Length: 157
Image (cartoon, rainbow, N blue to C red; front, side, top):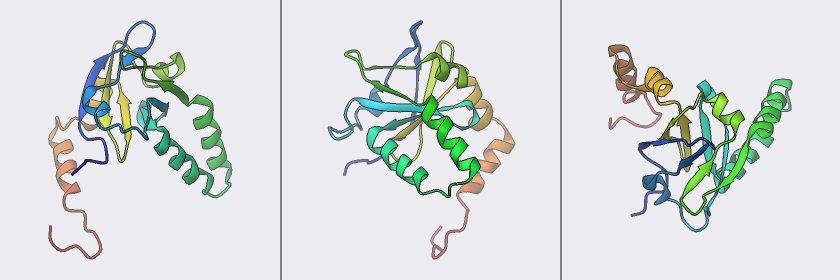
């Protein structure tokens, strides 16, 4: 059985040129069709989102099907303007430009976290822990509630 999506998390350093190692645990899940090229865009809550090219293209298709409202058009304009295409170099690093580093408040360290499919969140580690770190009773309760969300037709949980 082959896992089809990223799982887990990894923390790496960022050098003075904005380069960071693409974690081995995620690199192993890239297949030939994914290639060495990825797209990094601003994400919610001052994060970044890393997409394989295939995932980026699927996301762009989804965005193009949204109603042509002012809000959707502004979002698409901003997303496309600030997205950055980068390739894994010979040392398996990706490059993040200054705009993305500033958006995610990245300085010295980056936390890669799995998202749905072959996308990753890139976070300031402190920011991620404040939002999702399961370090408080409230955070643990919210996490626990996620297991009990009712799904239509499912009574086996």
